[in-house]
Length: 167
Image 1 (cartoon, rainbow, N blue to C red):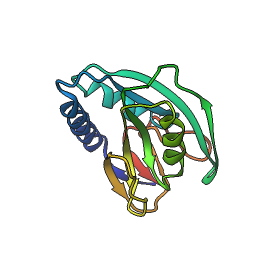
Image 2: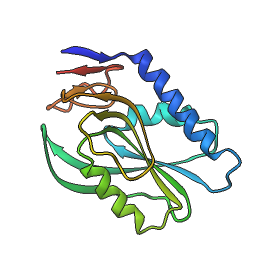
Image 3: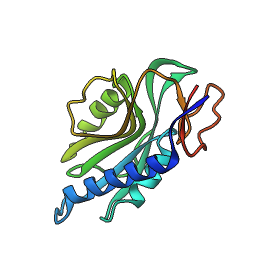
Image 4: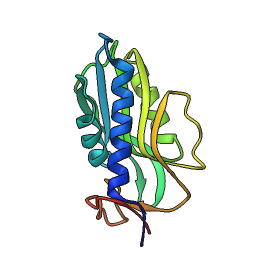
């Protein structure tokens, strides 16, 4: 195991993204809703919304796409409880990888007629496709399997590590 990104750098980048998003909506009367994709988003999500000095709504979806290290069918196992029609929606996830999960979530949410949809992730891969939506990514990595900062290993452990590690 080797440390890729330390906790201090994660904290700094999270605060920068939070401020950028907040700055985009100062004076805008359209509500902002942060939609976290469970389980991986929880650590980044909570720090991100606390770093945003504007009013935001918070909600979550649970989307499963990985079994062990293999991506499979995308399943929404928990839906939003908040209406998003006419709101600025930010989908927050731990990692933007193949884009398949995000694409499925965006297609699912678009039928609910939000004002806009943007993507926010702690990590993106250098090989990830460029999303069509406005996006914010704190860090870009190679093809390593990573844990920490909300991301787990094959046994569901190590989400609680404050930094990001390559296995």
